[in-house]
Image 1 (cartoon, rainbow, N blue to C red):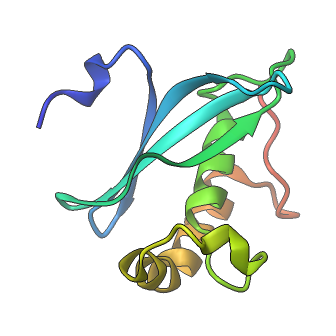
Image 2 (image 1 turned 120 degrees about the vertical axis):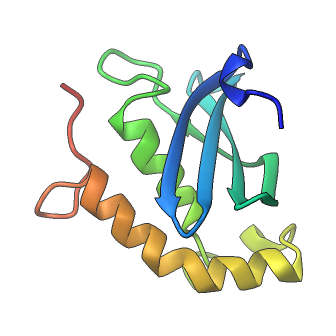
Image 3 (image 1 turned 90 degrees about the horizontal axis):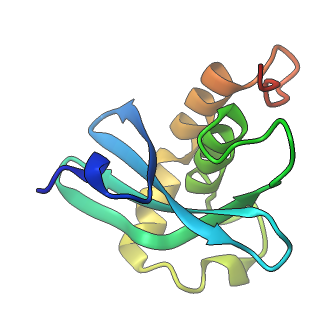
Length: 128
């Protein structure tokens, strides 16, 4: 595998244990002006979600950066989505294997997200 950090669009990497690695990439901006973050999710050497299958956006305003705490918290929230968290249409592009993976790992990823990136009330920590 090539060195992903040399990709000019690479933003950050999140290692969650159990072989789960999430890479985030600059995806430009949405028409709303938000930074677009494309993700790739792997577990060990297996690609779970290919780059760009899961995307999210953060405000492109002072205090937010595409590689800051807010972005990392949002990426983990995105990856942790499972059926029942939102409307069924959201998951229409998931394969049966991706749905099973989301069901299995969602709660653990959410716990990691809260521990790393949320305050005692469960709200995202503020950027410093």
